[in-house]
Length: 313
Image (tube, rainbow, N blue to C red):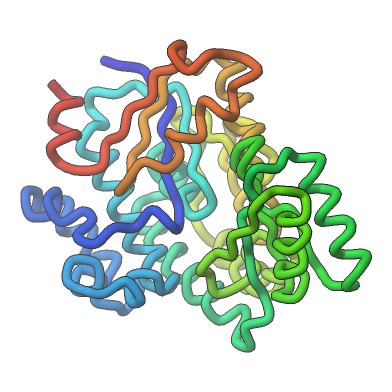
């Protein structure tokens, strides 16, 4: 039985046709899609197996649908993997919680359906935005954020600490646009993301406030293995600690660099990314460049039935 840390991606990892092969080969996998459709009241299979990019990008559908794909991939390999831990990026953290038994799959589908709706409705006037600032290090990005906030007087924070060279800012549209301009002046790049709001920032406070009672109502179990939380990057080993991490997640930055470093420091050398396409696996080596060379790290992607079967052999 192989050992690995499980990585579950979030929004941005969706693909047309995702999860179809597993669902058509397994009644259990198809059942999870149907549960998600009931929880979200949306035709998820129609959207992701036959829809267009615009429909697939709608966070109301994307959050439960991607959760189904992540969990079906985990179910396909679970009997042959002994996890050292798990982590999910943003939305993916809910898949990590389900894989570790902290939350039931049904609870996770209900929660991600609600989360998708609340996040879609959090910014009806389109005031928020996000952008990736590239080719700049953390001190440079922090300076851009501080200078931008001082100059325009509007909210902007570092929302995703993805890798030392891939940082995402979140805030008002004016602030994010100014930050992108400042990034260019510093010989970096600012790429505005196609999102419907300023996620992982205080601008999500109202949505987070509405979401919190439903999180608290869920049954929180002791994790079967460590789960690393976005809000602080550390492993949690109790249901209450997992709840606290998710209560803070919607308005807090994603501390992915610390997450990966803490996993390595706790003994991880192999990672298994379970999602539609390679995203998180590409972040492992850059996050750990101060600890290991790329050839010392084992990173595998399981994104369809064929790869799941190959891992199982």
